[in-house]
View 1 (tube, rainbow, N blue to C red):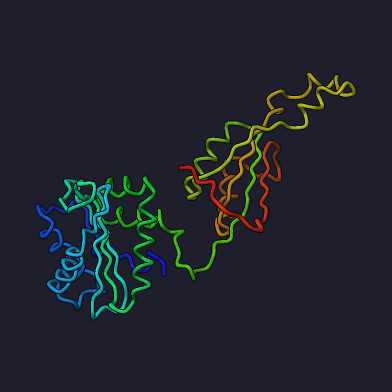
View 2 (view 1 turned 30 degrees about the horizontal axis):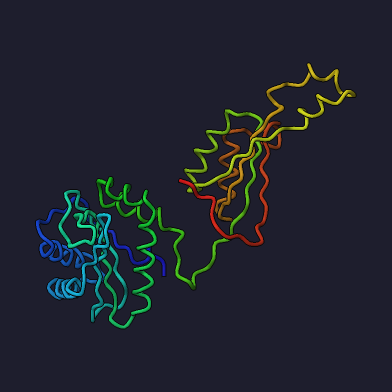
Length: 274
């Protein structure tokens, strides 16, 4: 199960106002019924289920975030929606901070394991500091919805298919291309790359006595290069290569840049730095 399958934009809201915890729980219950998933369940039933769960201990785990959740008879699938409240609501958080972001999860009574997985997926996604900032900055429900999906698209259930990754190497002798290509990587959702300072063979040939008379002929600016290394999902490779050639021109007809795409037999970890 992927989060995008259960996140419903119809229940998401920005700039919701509530004075108390009870008032917010009622508001969340009303918003749940905007989704077709919970449309047949009375908002009072949803409110009671959420309130009963809160009575066991606050779902506000700190850092201005809460994940109210409940299992409901009558639901045949999960529902996830997001609500922001810039002013914040007192929700009995451990760090005593008011909650500004609510992630509501409602699911079938019998789907205990899936419920726990979804809670874990959402919690892990919220460990990315940029996600909270983007969600609080969202001014529309669409922006809120898309920001969450953009930051969680790689999260999959344990039985979901693994993404096939490729190692892309881009070697550049023209430095002005570098920053435009870095912008392209970010646009493609690739948030980590290693840049290696390198040198072309001209740098070394110039120091060999046999080729000494070519020193003045060779362009000094082409002695040094930069090599970008990035792990890229296989399905993005073609688009990335096309984007690079929009910047550099046809690489089969020009000098000064090359792209290599290598298979990765196995990997652990990530180059992500943003």
